Image (cartoon, rainbow, N blue to C red; front, side):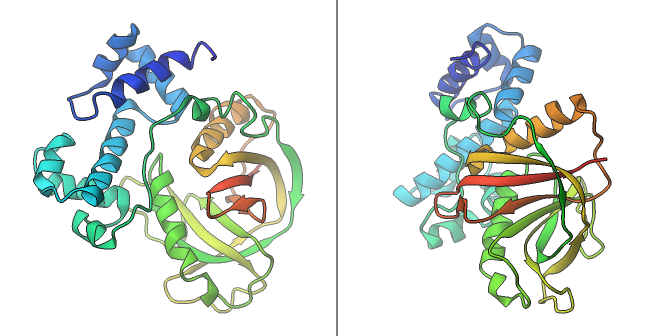
Length: 288
């Protein structure tokens, strides 16, 4: 195991044993013998999220499992997860799962969850979870129709919920072409309001031959033909944030290129399995 991963793996074990106890980054860092500042940076670089984010999502996922397995009162589950009130727990739960705890119980199944981080996941970047050096390509123009919204940093779970909603309606789109889907990322879109605190817009969509007919509740976007750095993410979709963090935080600053003022996009084709949420995904970063 690489030296920089072992302390994070030790920290994850410490956290998982104490999910129902008060936890903060200082306590976890002290357990493995690192300063709070250094440990925070190390944890973030390996997992792509802070200790607080990891703990919050794990607690909510375990709460969801308890709701399906036992007939416990919500206030008991809320207190066990570290929330002072049922109202605060409900707000946090709805933010992560897209529904209230009551609606979740009626649905009776898990859709999204935060699983414990594993060494295998941490080794994603270490063992070829993506192409470390991209292929520089000229990509054709793409016309896309889909569903979108605005998002803040570390948006994986919210974007996955957007794809769930889009998949239920994609057959409404006329003039479809190709057997692939596109996830488009841009600073803003004229037809999508940006919520306070959000930093970008994401559209889950399909390529089309014409933008003349856009179903209600959907938006259209034109991706220009231009030069891109094409990376290939390999493995679980949940590891995609690690690939994205590498592209933006490591490769681009060190490369000879600059990010162009144009949408980035992900391409999902037959290499990606929507059932297991794993496979290969091409990521196109516009460069100049």
